[in-house]
Image (cartoon, rainbow, N blue to C red):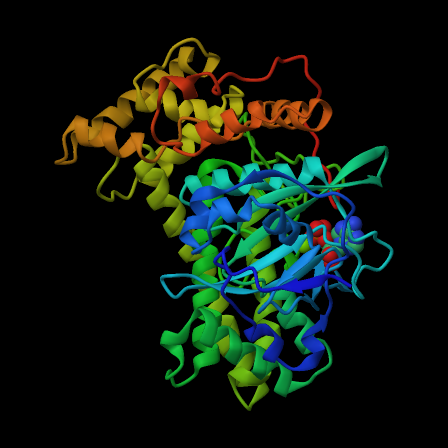
Length: 491
Ligand code: AMP
Ligand code: MG
């Protein structure tokens, strides 16, 4: 058993509202203590915003909490139950290697989940060992913090500790635990879990809890469950558009990996696209390309349909009418997504107002980027700084024609060229966490115990729109000879 302690100096301030849901939604479950925890990285600015004392968290008894060896007094650890469609197939799941310590109430009154990932077996572990390896936990830390800095809603990473224990995957790897911070861990799959047993009271309890926690403004709505569905659709449309705009590929958009709060969650085989190609897939197990870059909006719509199905009994007493309400809400998704995406693309091209031809202007650029195998991020950066040289795309006659069209488009708006440039600077990141640079950082950390490479990378990623000289170093592409990049699940 893990020991409980007051730990007054740390700033922990837990409530445990999730534990007040019906019993079937979770199992009370503590983390399994580990042999010799060592703090690898602590997110000082996130700690401060949560009301935590970073210095005290670095003490032995602070680190023991991140390792699951010590439980702060008011925490009530539990593993959440959920279900999910994994690559289209329904499964009962749940936190198989994570526990929720509780909800930290921050100084500004926000409520966020504090979850230990890699904390040992739970009743939902199935065949797994409940543990996580250092590389993938640092990877989640780097990518989630990069996403946050890019202005994209995401779970955050508070700390990574090594456990002093190793785990067996293809080889023996150092074990680690990530402390993850989330608006909540309520997933589409949590609703699917509730709906699985046809228990309307449970679906209602979860929907009411979700509304109270995330969408309290709709509590008095005439049909608050319809409002919930509409709002989740809206947030996902906004979120996925932002992913597409920076070239982020989630890699495993199963329904259990889609958060009802609208945050990006569960960084497994995710990666950023370099060369623009809608068919890009990095995940080793996604052989069919279900979760390819260009397919993400479609999959989001599919997942939201699964969410809507779980709400049917709450939407209307009459099933046909409930289905009609759900279909109408779902039919909004594509338009909402398209609108968000096009608005973002206009910004990337320095366009302030709307013209009918803007979509074709954007699409013809993308078509050329695909044809000439242009790097997505660097192309927009070059456009921003008027440095369109030295690539096959920029040398093409059709690009010159497009460039002229774009320039005359900019001439037709009131705003100055300088305003356009400023808009583009703040919409086109100087850098993304490029796969070869992330791997380089993880290699140094895991193989040599050298965390300096990762810390430099994290620093550069923390202000992606600064366009500093330090960041220029991270814009170079991997050597052409390197094998296609592959990412892995469940590591
Ligand atoms: P993921 O692919 O990370 O979204 O995980 C899918 C499911 O597998 C979730 O229920 C996880 O909790 C579970 N899982 C992943 N890795 C492990 C592990 N090492 N031990 C136990 N359960 C795991
Ligand atoms: Mg998951």
